[in-house]
Amino acid sequence: MMPLGLLTLGSWLEGRHVVVIDGRFELAPEARVVELARSALLLGVSVRTGEPLREALRVSRAARAASPGLPVVWGGPHALLDPESCFASGVVDGCVPGAGEEPLQAAVAVLRSGRPLAAASGLRVAGSAAEVAAAAPPTRLWPRADYSLLDVERYFEERGARRLDYCSSRGRREAPDWLGLRPERVVGEVVELAERYRAGELCLQDEDFFADPARVEAVADGLIDAGAPLGWRAEARLEDVLEAGPAALRRLVESGCLGLRLVVGGVVRERLLETATRFGDAGLGGRFVFEVAEGDDSGRELAAAVSAARALCAMDSRFVTPIRRRRVPPAQAEPGRSLEAWATLEQAPWADAAAERRLSRVAFYFAEAQRTPGRRLGKHLLRVLSLLRVRLGFFALDLERVAVELAALVRTGRTRPAPGGE
Image (cartoon, rainbow, N blue to C red; front, side, top):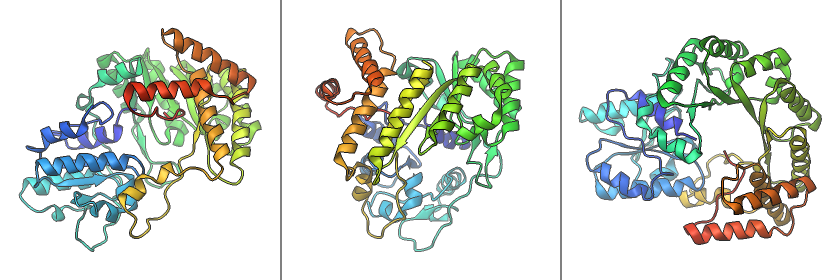
């Protein structure tokens, strides 16, 4: 996924020289940051609780070593959850608790005027005992995203497709501050972006694209009227599909919708199969992401997910059914917990080791069975074996998985990422 959050922040700082660094593409992110840090005004780092904290810490330390006077500001979920653990690292000067656009803009303004970082509104600084309320999203519509801040071709290359990410709204329907761009603006921007970057597919990465059904219908009508030769995908909820009706779903397909992504967890099987039937009748593809959480009945929950995923695969070859571990939101910040403790939070093994092993096997074989194999003979063979295992529901004696993970470790020196992600 393209870093749309960083893209939004960079676009908000229009008129400033902004460099967005995606650490996933850099062999040595620290070296790139060090190169820029010597002449930079500010380093902003987006941090999520878990393993990403280690990368954020390494990059921040490298920047501080290269430019001791460079202000370092952390934002993102962890800066909101436990800013004190960020300050305890000794390399973080400020934290943005909440939406980052206006606090970051304020930080740039005060630094350019020669004032201290503490003068920026919406920012919590190290050593300050004053509580700072979480910054709310801006009340005015955000500026147009400046995709020139990203190496778009690099993302196309990594994906093997000219597929562009775009966000047309922010927030979820349950929140009072949900905000969506007008349909006319959405259609105009995506058509122009598709032409500029020769993109054939668009992924709408909204948190809740279907929060306003009338807006979705207007976007679909606009794409049809524009004659945009553009396929698109978005995330939806089961109730969105069940309440839309067959005509509305067919209208989405007519506008270029290739499929919808639904996160499935603890959903009644009958409702899930009814949703899949409506997808099939309308000609829509579906990505049904099954999430399994640790618990007393995690084994039973995993078995139900596997059964439902196999049933969906048998219904339509366009249905993709990744199965993954559900990321449990961290509890309220515990006093004194270190960044290292937060970093290892997601790595804690399940109490039921057998259920965790089965989840790893299931996630691997479903992912390989539904992955485009490419041209290598070994990939084709792995896909055939995985398809057979999914059809039979047999995931034990996972010699193929062990061989693939061992090969990845030998080739890259790192363990293979867990399948089932986005």
